[in-house]
Each structure stands twice: as structure tokens, then as C-alpha cells.
Length: 113
Length: 115
Image (cartoon, chains in turn red, yellow):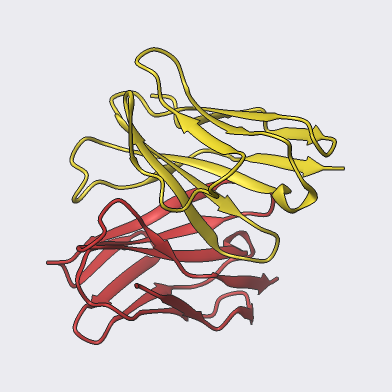
């Protein structure tokens, strides 16, 4: 069974810092991996989707990488802003059970002004 | 193009009552997923449906919970005889027909509180 882990569980940084959020998964046989952002009391907003054949995806100040063989993905946030404060979740879609996405528990990010 | 629409956003029920949560997928999406998020926990898969078919309900509790996605109208997650442990946020997501590579889009969630 696929297990997804996100470290750290919480992170507090001053505004302007570049930061990296980590996501690891136990089974490398995946179709894709998706990063989401969740604000308190809100739904999930899709940030980046990386297909299994891709190494990275970029959107604005966000860059997500995927190393399938080692079961890892990172979300890089450049020049962080207070508005980036939220919980960041990663989810993987396994090949042997493609009906499901498996989620990590998230990293709660606080960017201090 | 409207996103995934869920209602109600908040629902309060007393123990033993029924809860009905509705989800309309994004336009053009025929795949619907329901996930549950307990306080301070990650999202757990409940059920995956296509129009008029339950494809995978392996994450659904065996009793009291049911889901449907009729030919016309929204998908419904129904919880009968609710208990306090059912209090959670229930999220619906949809994806386009290309299920292998399709991106998941989530609604704002329905937050159920059982008194």
C-alpha cells in the first residue's frame, strides 16, 4: 500500500526566504504526483501536477521536482510571502490502484512579515 | 468555467439524523471522488464514481455511508444515523476523462458537525 510522508509537519520562515517542502512515497510506480495548497477552512487548490515521465514543473515562484526512483518530490517556493502561508499537501496516483490518490498529512507553512 | 461545487458548506446534525452532501463536478468532468478529512489529519479516500457507476468504494465505511452519481444531477454522499465520529470535512474532487494523467480539482468542502 502506498504511503506518503511530508516533512516537516510545520515550518515558519521570515518573508523573502526561499524554502523547500518535502514529500516522499513508498511505491515508485505512480502515474503522477500533484501538489496542493489548502487555506484554513477552505478546499484544496491545485498548484502543480507532475506526470511520472517528467522531472519538474514550474509555475511562477513555485517549482516542483520528481525523483520517482527514490520516491521523492520537492516543492520549492522562491522569495516567500506572507500570502504563501497555508498547508501544502502532496498526493500520488499509484499505477496499481489508479482510482485513488494518496495524500500526505501536509506541511503547515507560516511566512512571517 | 465553474469549479467543483459542493453544498452545503456547513451542516449540523444531531446524532441519529441523516446527512446528505452534494457535489457537482467541473463541466466536462465525468469522474468524481469523495475524500474525508478529520481534524489535523490528511485526506482519506472514500469512493470513486463515474456517471451511474460506483467504481471503487473501498474507502467507505461498510455501514451507514453510501454514494451515488446519477445520470442527471449532482453526486450525493449520504450518511445515515450520524455519530459524533462522522464530524469531519468532506471534500469532493473531479477529474477529466483522461483518468491516467488527469489533474484533480477539489471543491470547497462540506463541513459536518454532529452534536
